[in-house]
Image: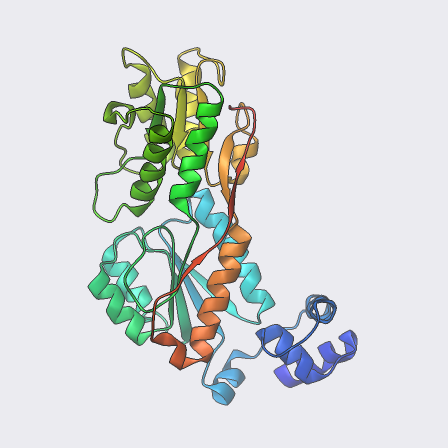
Length: 337
């Protein structure tokens, strides 16, 4: 469909001007929420799609953005990608999605925009990218970072307060009368920011209750998969005094921990209370349903996409003080505690 004809048809269906349609789908200008909803309903009903080539000729931008995450097989990243795809569609953008495997050379190539010349900007969740490489990427390509690791770069970083969230999860286990509380998710590899921030909150929660951190109750894991959680939980259950509460740094780890507890014929939460992190869909259907920290994934996606489009549309926004943009979180209490 030709973009001009498409705009006209959408405008007629929504009862607004073509300029208003253009402003709504690009997220620019002023319009009411009712107008936005009317326009987006017409966009969906008519199947309107922008003409990328025409836009590139007219504005110098393609409207194509790139999201790069470590793994799409991990439910958290799959759900976050889904939110970002919806946000991009609502802003008249095409979002490409890539998995980096956490490999620094892949993260750098994607951050530099070398994989696709049409890409206007990149949202990257880095695991291994070092600051020097990330600085080169930020100077060349409109870039927004996601995740726990904060780089000293002049580009926005979108995250939640992971340390506060972990502290709250630990306090919840304490409020349930648990005193031998373990953590599953500690990592010893470089740049393990998820581990570092959540372990810090865990230790703060223990200290606030007058409890001493014991590394025996925080076994190291290689990755945040179910198998890693199961292995760590088995090791904890083999201790002379097994834990009566466990805080897992990801729901996948918690799912593995629940499996290991059931293997031993123990009860959750009777023998061991379990808390996860991420509130992925599976957390509602584990046995028992999992208490977990729920990051506001929709807000993370909105903040990241808005920040990236601002950098794409305003080159002057690519320099200056880096901004850390925080989305909210909440502890969702279910039957596992």
